[in-house]
Image: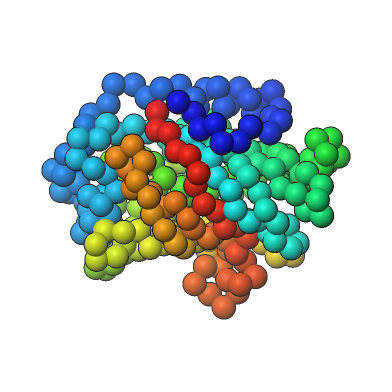
Length: 258
């Protein structure tokens, strides 16, 4: 069952079609056993054994409902739903209320194309975009968010390398490109952070590759999967500019794997 915490804001026809396609149930899946993680580098193995309870069906898509704060000039409350299937795409639809006025819209990635579209009061354009820059940025986001679907860690689209005792590198293939995603893992297997070089245009600069990261503040278990339940994300993670680059803080309200 999909999360029911929040209604999905208005989606365009193509975005709604994407959501319908992504909403398909996973096909027959295996049940997780610890032996499946034996070939992974130590930090990745430690994380996966922490993140997936033995006997859990390895479902590869998830519905998320969340709330938090997003920076649109200043920090504002938002609520959102997301449908995420890391092998294919995502649709993230949200509503924020800067100055008490609703701004609704979506970010999406599907079939090798990314798009963003945001409207004030449901009709006045605020921010829209497509094309290669938006696509590469959206693909990088999806590569990083695979940690919300831990079963994807065992996908052929993910190649693992060890960095050191605390960090593992996941080379995630999205849209024919490989994204280098670094997971930092605590001694008990808890996920501490996720970082990657991601295409984007933070601040007032043009598009380019910048460090993007998510700091995990709290985990929770849903349907046998332990995932980030409260986190902060943004540009220039781990750098002096992080205070300027952080732009979203979220907490999950409902999670349903499919």
